[in-house]
Image (cartoon, one colour):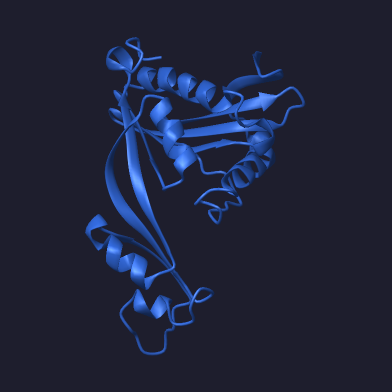
Length: 204
């Protein structure tokens, strides 16, 4: 068991019985971020050598969650979430620290993640030793913002009227996209070497 800010929790492998609590942790964690509408009804399966870790509070609830997909030498964080009642206690850091070691054991030499433009999240990754590199746009066009906004994002097709569109675009279209659509995010890649070349010199 670990203690952070007076809260006791255990970092361990995800178990199927954690699913309900995992989903609640994720949706509540994302609610105040640019991923507020990225709601899941089932937890994605991380195929080996990928893995899922959770930080479990003393009452058995999931306080934090981290999913990592591993393909060759690249380990990618697919989900990182800390329940609002347990944030700013070091739980996210503990999960990432544990994930580095697990990813190295799986043969990965780089740990990365893609995220949108929430200042707190960008600062969190930077503080964990990640460097920002690649960028592209996430563009949302929704009729709730402007009735014909989705039609501006797709080519017309007889008999089909788009209601919501989610699209990717190159960063060179940012100015144009922000003028045309009410919700545009810059998606950013953060990465760090792990193993012997990791940010702490030891990889974990």
